[in-house]
Image 1: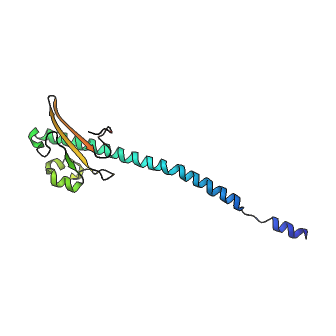
Image 2: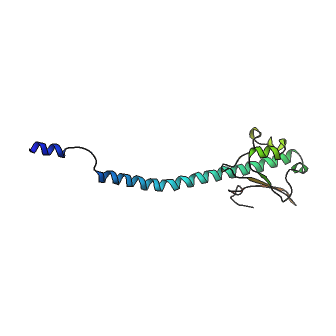
Image 3: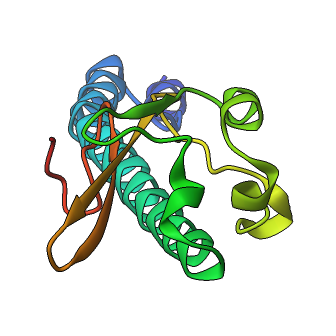
Length: 143
């Protein structure tokens, strides 16, 4: 009889309480990890978008340096040119301007938002600013 009792108590495994504790701990870890992941993803998209704004501004500067100020006729003073996709860019922008980009491809916002290109002549030269409708300019500022 004694052998039988030890045989019953020698079974290996986890109790239901131990398994429930593990599930609760994993749930807490997931609840903490998801907001952190979303924040990192959002910051990455904003950083990529700000880099695109800088690329567009430098391409516009290169376009102006290669020609003259009259070449910016596709952007009206103090009125933004809104680009919502690379396809729209091909329709609205001159090929010489698109040639300033790598492979002639206009950058696209990682969040699929629009870029607005502002052009303004000032006493100290020409000012070109690019803003994203979601992320602002390359410094995170909106117009």
